[in-house]
Image (tube, rainbow, N blue to C red; front, side, top):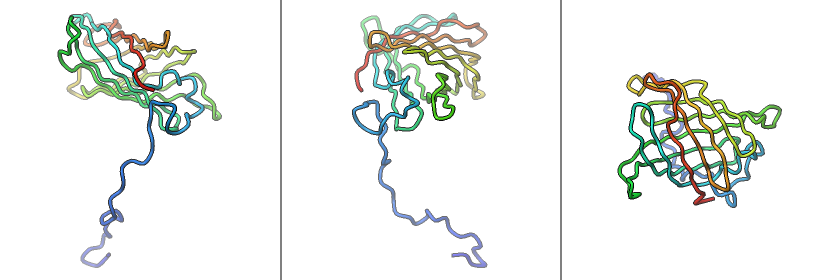
Length: 198
């Protein structure tokens, strides 16, 4: 209630009842949840839960093997949610330590209600780096390169990136190049993941 002593009314949510859990389905399983947005049809093969292994390296670090899980989901709107978790593995295929994580969004460019084959992608890491990529969808191949890299003041210097994704014989393959810490564009990560869900 507004009075002379209290000229600002309390916000309408102050004494409102609690809300239920998030009521909308986000899924990597196309057999459940909302219909896929038509603009996402070219990216349909990517939707799923993927797991596999890869090899990493860079001119400034030793090569390493890693396991990885990638989840690509949708909620009926014209974008995909992307989440990746990786861990370093030993020669015996045992987990050694957590490695890179990132989340992001794959957004097809839509003109007059139709996808153009172009893609806008955001990737964010807990190490303080956000990359904006511009890409192209060609069949089951997606190629993208950075248009912009943002870093927090304490993040590693990353200046550019290039990623190539493909669905090959039902598996998700990718290669990632990076320019960072004074090094020009160099191979950084590559992996093969198989569909384990969706």
